[in-house]
Image 1 (cartoon, rainbow, N blue to C red):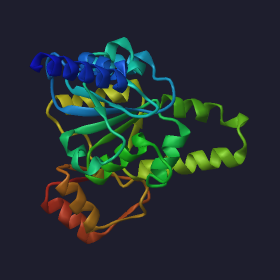
Image 2 (spheres, helix red, strand yellow):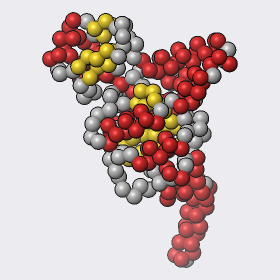
Image 3 (cartoon, rainbow, N blue to C red):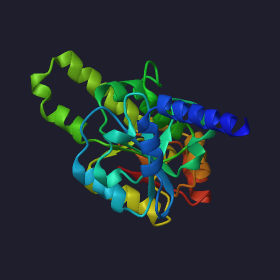
Length: 254
């Protein structure tokens, strides 16, 4: 009788595993990293194609990339160079998990994701939610912008209203402290993280704010920054300059 019960139990376990899908088993097996190279960086993919060089830069860097998978982007959509990455399968609830990472890298960004970030996550997908969670905790966020640059190059073909909305979303997200760039800038961002240096925290950028106050400088200090990049034309209050000097924070105009 005991052997019959054990056989039935084993069969039920197998049926449950099959019901969950073979893709889950595949992601678990292929997502076990061989060696942790450095600080963990969450890699979030949007809906656009990611240049091969970007994946290679992430895989060859001195950080430990972790891929976000969610309904709409699965582990099987990662390229071969990223097949061994661990995965973070999550739809939400980032408040308790984003602190496990040193930074976030958004690749293959598309217009819906950019718009959702600019709207503080309204109607967005997990990539927007994860990005906002990283920004809200002061983590440095990099957005690989090759697809957005392509839109800019062909903006003459677009309706003026769409171009204005895109540019407004871009400026808004940049004002949150997101660093936009392509492969060369990505390598520098990863190098700072992997080399033990803090990449520029979101709080260390004015992102076009007109007036810089002591609260802005305090945010840089809490994030561990030593440089506060200020947009041309911004006004730095005297008290903010004094606090920056006392805390050893350099105010640099772009």
